[in-house]
Image (tube, rainbow, N blue to C red; front, side, top):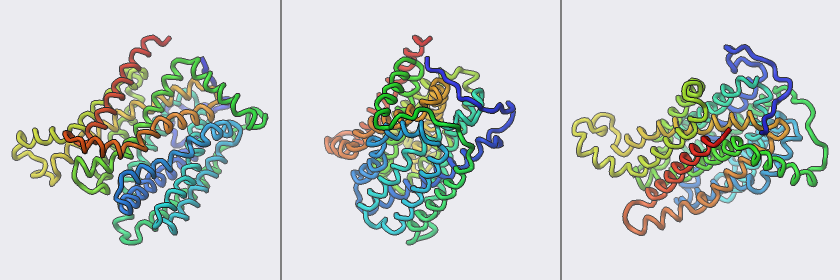
Length: 442
């Protein structure tokens, strides 16, 4: 058992909205601004690189540039986060990301410069999210952690939706030839505002441990790993968070290829086609506290995993599904009613449940880890989670484009179909393992 309590958290009235909690509000505002800017920037960079190179392998390299710093310095960042004031770390991270956006305004014409600035941007982002997640339990009462984590994940999903579906596409389309420069400048302003808001967060108190980082890092990381190994529920929650983050990275890498090979439309329409994913996640996070009471929090994660697996199977088989429905739908064909192809309509119909299922996976797992991780280890534990997620996603992200090309050249179904079915099988297996493991938990 590694259950810990954060000291000195003020009680909040049960009916009070967390958005009116004076300690939580600056955290939420900073997260919202930075999440919208991050999502809009990543969407813009994927479009810029794809237009410049026409290669899905190059988009994989861009994603690699965003995750490489986590693999290189993630463990060190976790140890440092447990020693540094997390609010100041968040402010510094956003300031560095604002500077990286300024660099992109002037250098986005060169793909090599995008990769280099992407590395800088990712290194700063590496510090931001673990600091925010580790700080959250110190700002809200323990009995409101489920609500706080739901709102955190709601903001992540809402930020992705606003950034990728609204802000970036609107700026790129309305601003014409200057759209990319204006988008990067807008991102710089939003990150600067998020840095200023982060400075309003209350102090956390003194940091634990004063040993030199060079000598303390191996010992402190090993202690965090030992704590996870000794707690069955915490280890399982860590596995779920790693799986969720890995799925997001794989999804971001596969979307452009899916748009080309399966739907036959331009990748920059992905924000519209997959907008129901964000809407489904928002709905899932909105009803999550109610579902946790009705069904029990332990049941939500395997339900979410099973739902993700089913939706991925549907997305993989969308072409034969569309062929069958085309023969059966007649005048009700969406092409006649909505002006959308059957492929797009089925994909959008599956995207909503996919987002809903993801909400059932991520927020409950994060709440379990918050409840069971000692306050002085939270930075290390959530940094370890980021390192594990990016490490497991590294090989698929690097080779997913080449694997899809190879499978497509063998004849039969498109390569992206086989890849999605493989991912669906892995997710379904994790759901089965989760249910068996939960039966054996105390």
